[in-house]
Image (cartoon, rainbow, N blue to C red; front, top):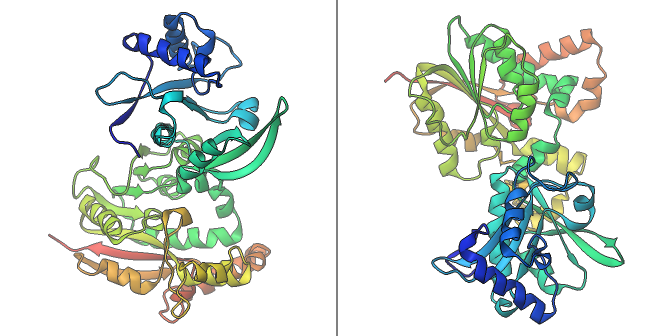
Length: 437
């Protein structure tokens, strides 16, 4: 990618250069793209004003238009406009079918220099700043250069569509696989079913064992707030940290007036909003699902320990690989396990797994958890298989009447710490206390 490139918004200091950019497109006879209809404006000042009006819902000139940010690609320290790119904040019906979130164009004299890819990559960062989890981009089906640019930036072909006798190819670029997953996933709905309640009730059973009046509680990676809200219903105040904006929105919608929960958007890797030794109980019930290297995992554990009082209790959840291999690879065939082996995602001898961000979940075994915790000033209290066999028999568990389900829970509670069984669970819970300082 060409270096020292920036996206800047149109301003008066670029008027002469914008005028020259516009004229070059007319001279070339090509199509204008990604420039907020620059071709229609003889007065560049009027165009700059229009671009500014488009940035906010209150000032958009036409109520049917979508707010958008207009950017120009320039090299740092220079005023030459190399290209233009337009980012629409969301999709209306037309954009959702034909035009997408982003349109862009490169100055005719600056083409074939890598600027389109650089400009699109920079704009995708703007999309991430607005918490978009994926972006739709379209191009003419015969525009091979644009197709290559979109694919190089992660575009995945969706389908073709026809707009005014012009065939367009549609591509989706996923910006945050984790956000995309949770924005589609109904976590509260899962927990409402019997099989989903097993993990929740098991976790709450152990949390309740250590809760004492007056304790301060933090939940890091609080999701939609199921655990925080349950703890608040017991009369405790909770500091809840969650990264995903969609989860926070659902969390806030479900808050009750009497629940004392402070919701903070933040990352498990940086809990600097809290002082050290602040909490009696710290819950980390989701972040380790989505951390893919040892440094990040140890950072998350270190931060949880830092904010926990000496003698306090930390709860950390994990996704266990063998449960996923059996259920999703062999039983339900959610993924092609042979293909995963061919691609090096699963070792064909040991069946250990390799997870990357696009896989969404980091899959581990208990020996991985033991290795991770080695050297931390902690003492393990429990290692719990929070759902054990439940996910293999979802339909059976969901069909149980209340009496049978209560009996099943009693059985599950009686075996969920047995060392000969914990490896087969889908989710595990490591519970330990921070040694005194």
